[in-house]
Length: 466
Length: 76
Image (cartoon, rainbow over all chains, first blue to last red; front, side):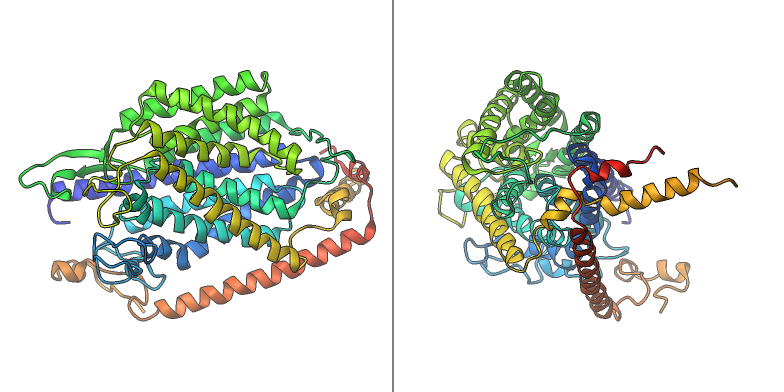
């Protein structure tokens, strides 16, 4: 950095992402509060620690290999050629955005005076990873072992979501080129995959004891502390706003980027490096939140738990196209997503005896899936990338956004990279006898010994004379 | 171990030499550090998995009822 303008742009971008990371930390704070509020008293501390420990578990693996996967896998491999080196192999050469720079042994993965962006960009994506794992965490509370959750958190947080991000979120991703996939704020890339993964785990894990009557009727195990749930969800909304900011490039000159000679056009862009504005996405974020809250309040008859969750589901449903939608479109899409997700949640619960303790599969998985499909219709014909627009299935250029591509993309996210891996890994853990806590522990409460010790301490202190 | 011993000397170098890694052991220690991280990582999983299994087995043997925990709720 030897000139002032270049230094200002670099430091501004570095600081911008740094701030988004701090904001996104609130997502995790919110998830911790939300899960503790939703769990029963006798499981509180283990529920909290399970969700807390995913922070180091995912962070270390994200450093060791998760970030590398994101930069290596945009081509599939073998599905569409990279626009950087025209190869369909893993991107590990010396090109500008190669995974080779993001190996754990790379000197860019540390304090490096020649690189002001890698660390904060790494952290922004890491916070997305935590979110993916946290979504799974809520669905499976009160009956999974911390060991099993750790393995599952690493799988979704540092492997499967980063593969889907390479495929459908990277500017060079094969899903953009072949399918015209568009998912600006991660309806599918984070939410549908995590919801699908959680559903796969739940299919193996089974319901909490007492959730279903002997005739199969579901019983409500409501949140123990609705106020903690409320604050938790408000913090998730706040962090989600930071997430929206993190999915953008704040300042970029698209003229030279697109190869337009003599043209300079500075703008914010979405993650695909196509133009949008922070102003526009702010309209859409709040209108889709409002649509979700309105629909949730109506369909859940004012139930606070579902109303707050529906606000989140509204944003998630509209997120795929919130870089381009009109605010009223965003609101209506949020409303549609909430109604369908809510109905699906109870239908799946009754039909398949799936006990999703916090509605995570519905709020994230179904709403994300629906949002991708709706996006294919509403944004039909828009370019999925600014680089070069071509025919669907062509592979060397970028297909336009279309309903079929979005539907296939939703299936890849929810089923192929979400549900199937979640189911298979849970099956393996179940086979090892490591998935579920013993029945007697579930009945007594995971925190039984902690509470028993605390009570002894209390008695000892209260009987003390000096 | 120190990669930079004098900032004035360092910043006076040609730009391409200034812009680089400055952490201790730059260029020689990265592989070793990653191996160390992996060992710590695997070790942590082994230790915590064992202690969790022991804890669950111990509690499971006591066969507490679903409401027994209520007698342990503290007032502080």
